[in-house]
Image (cartoon, rainbow, N blue to C red; front, side, top):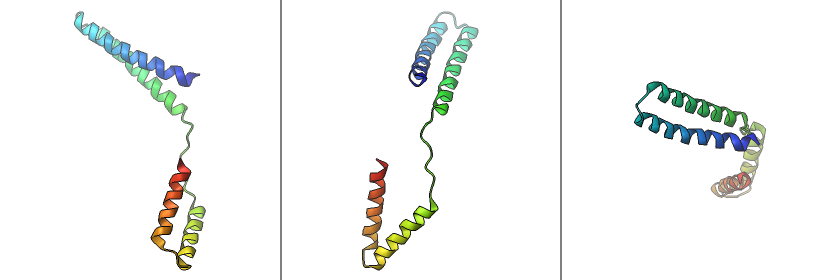
Amino acid sequence: MARRWIPRVCTAVFVAGVAGIIVATINGNNAGVILSIGLVIVLAAVALLTATAVDATRRIEAFDDAAAEKLERLVMELVADGADESAVRALVRETRRLGQQ
């Protein structure tokens, strides 16, 4: 639930803050009001960054050395059996792209 409303509230604060700064500048250029509005905008930005960092569900892929060595060994076996190395490596790249989709 918070995933939906925190960005929306922060966006509303950003838009209202920019409008507030414009209005406060036109209506007398009061530095205290403008700084207060800017502080609220900064707090909304920090809240949005924090919510995004906490909600990160996608993990960084770890590189598996054993699987890479096994794949390289299989490629070398295919090349030793007479397959074109560039074609085999292109097939591996395309297979990896397909697996990431």
